[in-house]
Amino acid sequence: MKYNPEITKARYDEYGDKEWDRLEKDRLGDLLYHVHLDILKRYISSSDHVIELGAGAGRFTKDIANISKSLVTSDLSPVQIEINKRKMEELGLADKVQDFKVLDITNLEGIADTTYDVAVCIGGPINYLFDKEENAINEMLRVLKPQGRLILGSMSLVGALMYYLDGVLYEKGKFGIDATEWLFTTGMQDEEHYPVENKHYVHMMTSKELDALFQGKPVKILEKSSAGLFMHSQEETLSKAKQDNEFWELLIRKELQFTKLPGTLDCGMNIIYVIEKL
Image 1 (cartoon, rainbow, N blue to C red):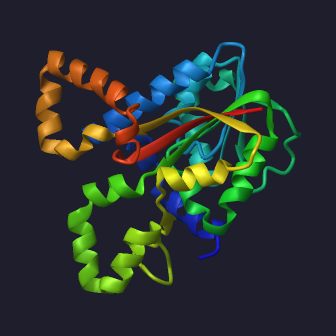
Image 2: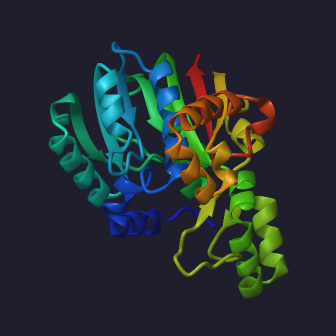
């Protein structure tokens, strides 16, 4: 499937304010938020000029604005950027965001080479790009200064298959075993092989595929992490866990620790890479 920005843009235009609530509506969202925030805090400093790509409604924009020197935030969806701007105004953070832009990460035309210290692209914008994935990586690296850092997040194929296996089984009944095997093999929920009604066409990735995107490029991988590892305990159990403050604090600490183990890299809902441009 070829990248079609109009499909993705329309999806997130329609998604609206629900994107802001996404990381608060359940305990899986809590887990994802804590792991991503931990990485942002460790790799962004108060002297860094940052560009945020695929920022959505701004759930992480508010955090990046508080820990960086300057921030430009962007998204493919004009609706999401307007929500982002409104949320930052409500939080009193609008003056900490240098600009709110509508940008397509496959072509960052208008942004000069070596402009930023850090590029943040988390939550999975890379998963919507199909044949343009490498274009996006090249563009994000292009706008980084030497020794600049790219914080990149991807939806995890293995983690998603484990978590949503009941739904995958249901869709096997609709699309057949060949389509299901295609999904397991390629991670692609695409228009041709896996025509889901909501048109959520994505390429969920493995760490091996992420490694391949950076193969041969002048970069150094500083960190690899999963996120949402304890999601497999399911929402009911996690909700009970959060009612016990001591236990929940321990669980978050261990989520941060265990997501760094090589054996868990593909097992969460997301995979996060931190890349240094050489």
